[in-house]
Each structure stands twice: as C-alpha cells, then as structure tokens.
Image 1 (cartoon, helix red, strand yellow):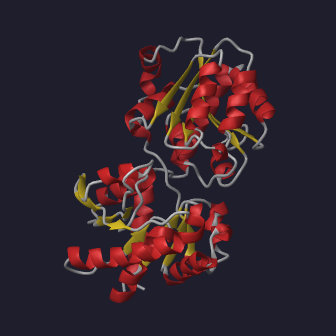
Image 2 (cartoon, one colour):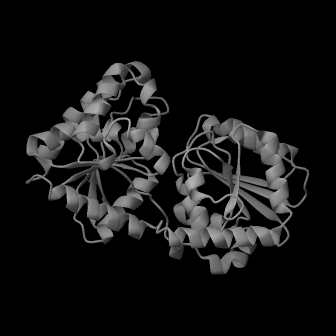
Length: 380
C-alpha cells in the first residue's frame, strides 16, 4: 500500500490494520537536496515500524519547479516503486490502496498492471481540484490511473461530483474519514483548561491547519485584531505553511493572549480541542477537513467557511456556523456573536458530537467500509 506522510493516511492504515488486515506500506519519498527547506528529508529512515506493520520509504527524484516537471517526478516514483516492491516482497499483493491518484496512485500503476492487482485510490482533493493546473502530461497520467482503478474513492460528496468527470458514477464512492471520540477526554474539560491556564470566563478560540492564505489565516488575523473583547484567548496549531512567521507576528501583536504551536503532538492537539470554546476555520477551499471531525469528537462547535465539503459536515445553526470565505469582517461578527452565548456553544458542540456518531464518521467505520470495498474489487 502506498501513502504520503500525513496524519489522516496514517490513521486510516492504523484503523485498517486493527480490523485484522495485513499491510505492507510503501511511502515513496523524494531524494533530499543538500541544503534548503527540503534537506530534512535526509532524516527520513529507510523503513520504520508503525504498530504491527512496517513502512518503507524508497527514494525517488522530485523535480522543481513542480509546474513544469511534475510528470518527471511521477515517472521517477513509478519506476522506483515498482522496482522496490518487486525486490522487497515475495508475492504480489491482493489489492493496492493508494492515497490519491497522483503521485501515489500513478506510482503504483505499473506494479498493479504487471501483476493484475486491483488498485483503489482515495482522493482528499488535491489531485482532482488542481487537475486543470497540471500540465497535459500529468493530466494524462491522472486519467490513466483513474481508468485503471477498480474503485475511485473521495472523502466528500462534493469531491465525488468532480471525480465523475473522469470516471463513471458506478465506480465512484464517497468514503469519509473521521475521528474516534473515545480519544478525547471531554469529561476532563475543566481540569484541562486549568492545566492550560485558561480562566473559567475566558473564551478559547482554536485554529488548526497549515499557515497558508488558502486556510484563511490573513482573514483570521484581521478578524482577531478587530475583535473588541477582553475575554478571548487564541490557540493556533500549524503544520507547515509559507505564512508561518507572518501569522505568528500578527498573533504576537494582538491584545488577546495568544499561543502558536508548531507540529504539536496529536495528544496535545486533542487536549486543545477539548479545552476550546470554538474551532475557527475560515478556509478558501476544502474537501472534508480532518480538524472538523476532531472538533466534533471533542464536542467543540465549528465556525467555518461555506466551501467544498464543509457544509456536508457542519449543519449551519445546529452544530456550528457557516460563513462566506474571504470576509474578515463577517468572520469577526460571527465570532463575536457566538461567544456571547456560552450555552448555545455548548449545545452546538453536543449536537456535532451526536452527528459524528450518527453518521458513522469514525476511523473504525472508515476501516470497515474500506475493507468491504477491497473485498468487492478482489472478487470482481
């Protein structure tokens, strides 16, 4: 199986493995340049143990600028993955699960064809929503991958409609990811807030995501700066992003107490979700962001942009509030309005938690449905 190093892929495979499925995970990783921001890829091990299964990191050539040379990267990944899997594993696999059509799905394509192995790919948005931005060669490679796939999976209905531009509807399935509520100590909320130094009357606003303009961090900074309240604290957790230092500087200038965290441990992130009064996610576009599932598991209401697959998750006025993207003043007004009604926030958080369970948006259910799909394609 092939994946990129992202938390939702890691959790998906962990959940699948917990159902008794044997995994070989291969995560193609670029050769690292000697200097620069990507030089840290040299620290990626050749293999590592994740629970009861091992992950392999064969290197391939990743060419920049991506706009012109992404197809070269795809060809290199495909050649390297096929050779590595042939050399490393004794027998062909029953099914290959790819985390996206490009690069991962395309990287697995030659191996699957050679051994007549079914390929299933799960898109989280990037390869489909950015399709028109790729050069013609990459577009052709994505189409080739989708044509071969036995099943085309997407994390949202909105993304499934895009996938149907490239594949028959009978081949496309929405497979949500999710979160496991039992990992969130909601019964310890007050104790966790005390440990974090959050006063009982303080309203904690939480942002989790990349510090990028597409995540709405510029609008968020402007809204927080204009928020005229003395009962607000801000916590921002980042996982990369070109606006990292700009955003941290803006947070430092706020009159509200603010704390920024960089690549925080998942347990610590879960504690912040439990402690928060409101998750704020003013993205410009999304599929179904993991952070909203996390907030629902923590009984935290959501204020988010009405884009992509978010309206499939958040019931406006019931489990949270949806607003238009790109509007810092509307964002400020929505924050101000919601923070004035603590009881309403609590009710929204409870409703979001119930919705998570009612819809089966948990990792256990995700793995069960994925296993069902694998069995179907193996018997076709």
